[in-house]
Length: 119
Image (tube, rainbow, N blue to C red; front, side, top):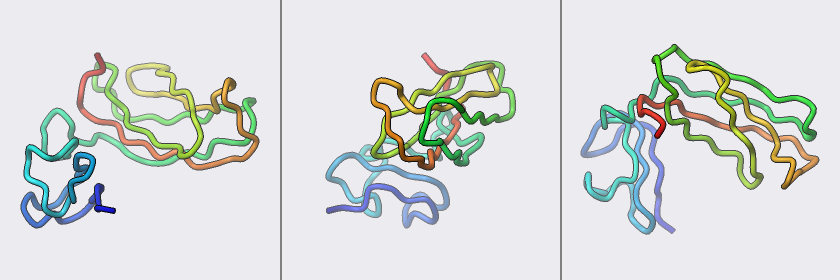
């Protein structure tokens, strides 16, 4: 199994966040083998954090970031469960358990807000 995610000092690209393509070690990846890099201007990180998602659908935690004037791309992970992300404004969103794939256990969802414009 190869290392695919690096947040820190990359030997070639310096400090930042990096995700390599499937099967490619992030430590030796060249710029064409990266799926994501914080050194790309459009994908620079605006905000990051985590929210606790309770084991029911009654509460939807929100989070915010500086207003960019558009809906940015948000990368989020809540493994192994599915979740729903809803933009509330151009500077806030909420996350909740997916009612179609409901799980009664709570968990932490990690997110990264980027400078990329949502299509």
